Image (cartoon, rainbow, N blue to C red; front, side, top):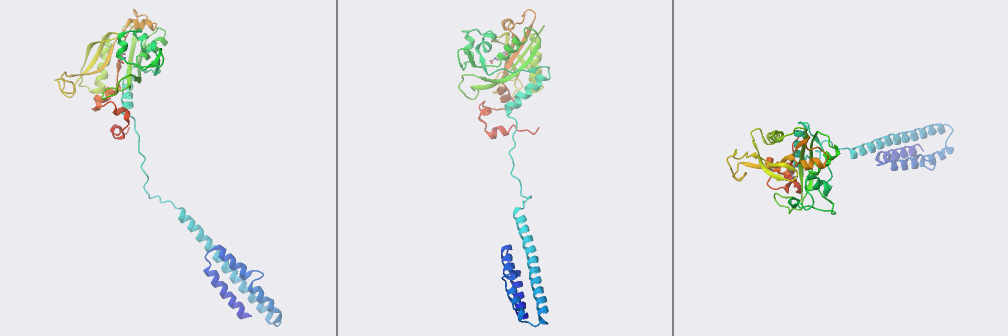
Length: 345
Ligand code: DAH
């Protein structure tokens, strides 16, 4: 009997040592230590033993049982630990792996020019005003001294929505709206950036949708010399201190007198080259003294108040400043073009 117990002990410990997982280990426990297991079976034969041998055999059987269950427990701990470690190993994150680069965005070239111009005028005491892109014929034309049938309306081929509503062809209607809202009381000092629309065929210098920035100053005693001084500051800040400006007579229905402003050509210093088509000057914007009719229609007394206005295209300014040769680059969103204007600010 003793031998049989030793044999069972050796057999069980061998199996425990080789158990590969917790389920297998549990099966071993049940088969060796369970009520129907071989040890119990051996003990059933104890009745045949002598009174002396019986307690010895009982003690040995307990010893064997304790040993086996102790080993099972030790093996169980070992298997559980191994399972946790395997799980941790499977879940580790390799923090040394380089991250995927996120492509950095930046302000669009046009946005930057518009903001630069805004900042410049805000620095001179202007505020920024905005108006609707879907505009009434009245503000886009009539209130700007362009009555129905006026030939100058043809200069700005328009997208009409109804007979009275159109996509604004310029930012000048914001002038009329702002003055009207002030009920004839000055002063007004605004710039109005925004999108405008014209029925043009797109090419290198035309786009059916583009940007304008309008400027308007209304007060008592505003003179053409104020306009010239303002435009001179603007041109030098925008294009360089060495630039000169000149005003040429022009025509706009909403200004009288009207002018066009040129800046001296940087390429040739004013001598004449291909950039300035031999003239030494480059056209930048239109401007003038607000027409008395425009002031009166907005409720201003034109004997008391005078004003100047100007309108410019930021695309044209960006093209000249950065040497961009096609206006369509601003709208086609070619990343190679846009990236050239990325700056870390
Ligand atoms: N609205 C004009 C245009 O789109 C530009 C302009 C010219 C605006 C002279 C003005 C101005 O305010 O005084 O062609």
